[in-house]
Image (cartoon, rainbow, N blue to C red; front, side, top):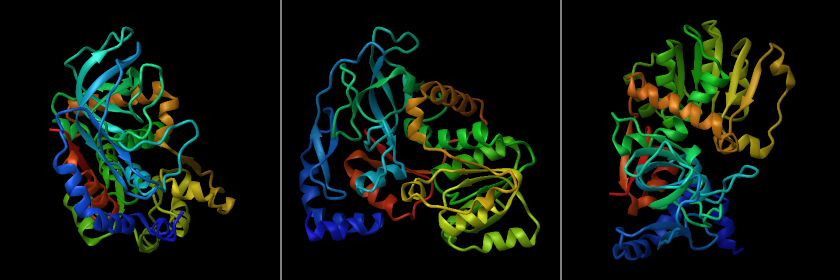
Length: 371
C-alpha cells in the first residue's frame, strides 16, 4: 500500500470523501457524462482506495425459485455505505459487504416458489446485493438497478408513499422498531433517551416514541440539528458533543427507562448511569464493538439490560426481519408513521451524496433516484 493510501485511510470518512472527491472530480464527470442509465448498471470499486468507485453495465441471471427480480426506483443511503466506501466497515460474520441495502421499486419477475408477489407489484426491499440463480452474490456490484433478492427480504410498499419516501423505511425503521419495541419493550409514559436523533434512525425512533406516547429526551451534534428536533416537537434537546445532557438530567432527577445509543466512550458510560433499575440500553453503533471497548461491570449493578443490535444480522433471522417490516408498513398505511425528512439525488451523483453524508451535516435521509 502506498504512503498516500495509508495517509488517506488514516483520515476520518468525511475528510477521505472530500479529498477523493477533489482529486477525481473532473475524471468522474467525464466518466458519468456518457453513461447509458437506461440499461442495467451497478457501481464497482476500481481500486482499494477509499471512495474510488465508478459505473459499469451489468448483466444478471433469472431469479432463482425463491427469489424476486426488482427494478429499483429509489434507494436510500445509510452510514454503513459511507463506512464501506471509505474502506472502514467492520463486516459481520457470514454477511457479505456491499453498498446499497434499502430499495423501493417494481417487481419484474418472480421465481417459481414465490406465491404472494407478482410482476408489477410496488415493493420495498432490504438486501446485501444481487443474487445470481446459483445462490451466489454478485461480487463488487453496488446500488445495482435491477437485482434478484430473496422473497424474505421483500415487502409491499405502503400505498400512501412515493418510491423515494418508501426507500427510507427498511434499515432505519427496522433498527428503531426492533430496538425500541422488540428489545426495549417501550411502554406508554416511559422516558426515552435518543442520541444523535436528527438522522434517519433518530427520526424514525421519534415517530415510534410518539406512537407509544413516551417522554422523549434527545441529543444532536449541531445547533441546526437541535433546532430541527425542537421544530418537530421535541422539548428536551441537548448537545450530543457535550456531557451537559447527563449533568442536566441528573440535576433534574430525571431517570431513563430506555436509551437508544450511538455515542462512544465516556458519553456511553454517563448515559448508562442515567438508567432506572432494570433500564434498557440498546447500542447500535459498531465502532466500539470493532474496537472491543471495555467498561466497568459496575455500570450494570442496577440490573441494567445491555444489548447490541447489528441490523445486518437480521439476514440470518429472516422471519424476524420480514415480520417486523410488515408491521412497520402497516403502521405507515394506517397513518401512525409518516415519511421522514429526506433529500433526493440522481443515482449518477452517488459519490456526491455519500460525500455529503460523510460530513454529517444532513438531516434525515439521503435518497438516490433511478428515474
